[in-house]
Length: 214
Image (cartoon, rainbow, N blue to C red; front, side, top):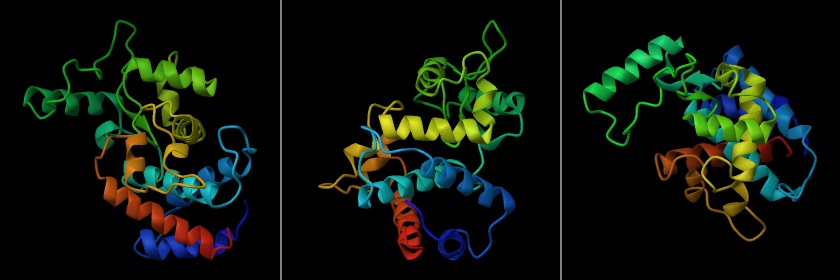
């Protein structure tokens, strides 16, 4: 699927970025578009028409939300370093602000590695780094910090959302020739958290793709 990227960027600039796109945002979106364009149709992504457009739009929307619309890989808490992120998470844990967390997964293990959230989506816990290592062929267990590299993070985004490797739910469960569920698709990443908000982003990305001739 190809479309006029000049029109696409002009449209998302006004509809999703308050009229201004920074260089990092352009680079992040471009990396996702390039990855989509060079991925051939497969058994996972067999449909070239509307289903494809919606898959791409929802991946862009997910990155938009998860990165605070920077469209660049971020650490959990948006900290500039692992040490700072760990300190912020530890403080929140001590104050009881992370009720769903029983084991502080962000603390460094015996090898000095932290399994805190990183990327265009928040990849957390060693088990999920192992899962994405298998899905992408990139050794994220040996170097979890690789999830902060844009190209690697894009691969993780695609592998997790197209195959269902994040939560067991995948794009094909919500967008197909017979189904369109923008709100339910949030389960691919994080249950129902901000589901309507992300759905709205996805619809605006889709509108931009269609306006650009995609």
